[in-house]
Length: 605
Image (cartoon, rainbow, N blue to C red):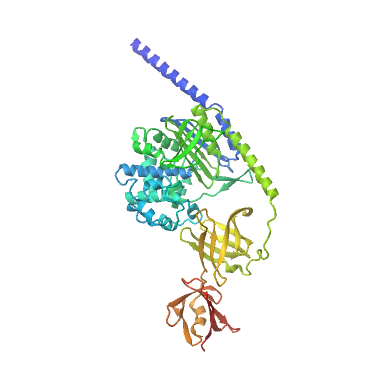
């Protein structure tokens, strides 16, 4: 008995000593790093950040810094929910990896065999684009991000329909071009093959399986107590709250919300061949494939300052590079008010997750590198100080450029704006981007988008500069956005608007004048026979409130009221009808305005 007791005592003592050694090693690895994190937050005026580090199958560091609610000074915790943005993509492609394991699809079959509703701009893409092409961003389509970001419809089907109007700027598999639409479409493929929504698939196959109980797939995920608010930095140092951006419609590309403790479980599964706590959540073969090069990104040559950081390839929902002699798998994420980085080193069995509630932030990138250097034993590099120095140098250069700006010669008459701003008013539509409306309000012109309002400031001729109208602070005239050029038809009427929206060519939005609400009683005065020389044309009412123009030998034209006594011909560009009214309010005739001239007709008495 004494020998057994002695053995147990020695064993426990040995385990205790081993644990102490491990704890001491961890303390050394992270010595002073909390103060470094706090300085990074301070230097970049970030509201908060959460960080988790995993090694093999354990979380070895998990902390929150700063505030999830900056105004109320509520602290960030390891369970604080953040938007992870495009870190979502690995989940969506991972779902396809699981479905392939189940025999429901493969990555080499043309995707339209699974999803005929997905139509591309040309026959070559329709015949050859595969899921693999979509998963590694090589379809030939550029981002078209403003289509969903500014003009997002309410359904994925509507968003999917727009793809057929998106013109590729490269050949298939010729160049890596990031594309959120292709990841949204992957989610729709999964929905069709499983009969379940993308949201339900992600929850049951990943969140539930891994115990990611704080994670969600939509904006509703922020309706919990420990949720971060999103922030931006304005005027170099002012922390300003941003509203949550609802991106459910593009969800499979970036709508997941999570915390670092949950994301740690996701990363541990990837480090351990798709397995966590004995459960195979992702196929091991898929894990290797997804984190291996599928498409070169470009620009991966080593630099002089950091020659041990180079390469750039994309796998399936992940990007890969060499970081200081170690194979790095990583993906960033950005959406209004939030920035994120999910990173791991497969050969070192180390993973780092950084989630911040700062818009377009460098904080996740800097902290990822600072922690990587510590964990990998790399030579010290002053990541934060170097970045701050470069930022300050850039500010000085920008200031010098502004001071040296020369006066641009003005063209005489370019500053003249149309006498009646209502000429611009109407609905503008692009098949690939969606719709917006231009209205006149208090002698100013505004564009109404699905989620925002833009002030249109006149620049020259029919060119305007957009300025976002903040619901709380109004118009910031120092932060101009896109320029919009309005185009006139041969009659001088505004027929379209165009803007550079970061695709191959300027995007054209065709204008239709907004129909005025006129009742049957108001339309009665236009009814009658009108004489075009020897030809009689008839104006009558169809149904309750639809005015029609009947011309002998031609189709019946639908008249759409656009201004007082002025109608456009439905589905005919450049054709309008203007009724003449005398002092008594009686209609005496009409003028048909056409691309080839103006034709007057008297009303038959």
